[in-house]
Length: 338
Image (cartoon, rainbow, N blue to C red; front, side):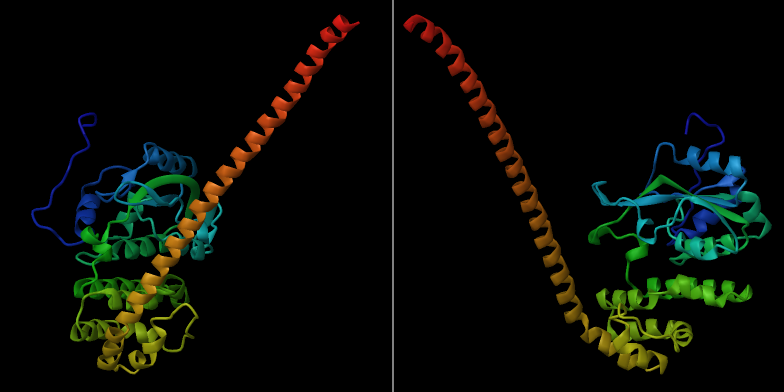
């Protein structure tokens, strides 16, 4: 802060409850050519800004994205590269031709660099007071972009908070479920305004199962869950004709009730499913523990095998040296006997 006169902090008088308002304030005050974002509990790599800035300057892209990793409270790595499962290759992607690729890179809002002139030209802002606001910003931004470049460079370490101190993204209360619904619905409206509604399903795929599961995991009562489900009415209507996938194990039992707007019945079923959900989580934890123990034992066995090999090598070496020594001593003795 002392090295750069143009760097200063801005502190809001009141807690806005989510990242939208402070980010909008920051974008309003920003005077540079590019904009980047970082949450206070996450960490930039030392060269993160330089890497993304250099790429933007060399290629004049609309956006440059690196990857991010997940760390725990002790800064131990949980997932080295969150994008690895989708197997996106480094390269330049034109928009909207490669919109599918961009949607797969939607997470890691802070592992990207954006053009300030583009943000101002299209008046792109974040929704305020709701979770999921960064997703809305990115969708609107990328739909107004010409290109995105992906570089396989680590930019951010994203901290996963523990259960005692959860981030806004993982506090399962009524505000959270209502706010996430608002963010997804805004994304649907943005796609619809571009006649790209079919692309919304790439963004929304699996979301209903995840948030239904989150309601089961929450401490909300039946009435609170019922009210939260009613807020998602637009989503159930949108999903009405979509087939249930084999992975949507929590959404599948209640989809029929949700499509028919029978939210009381669906809420009771979700509350009844809590014991099953706890058992499932416990089983996953037990399996993970056994796998960890198995891996640990495999490591011990491998180490012991290595020691055995070294001991056998040492034994063979000593046998060889012993044989040479015996032969060496035998020669003078033979001479004396003669």
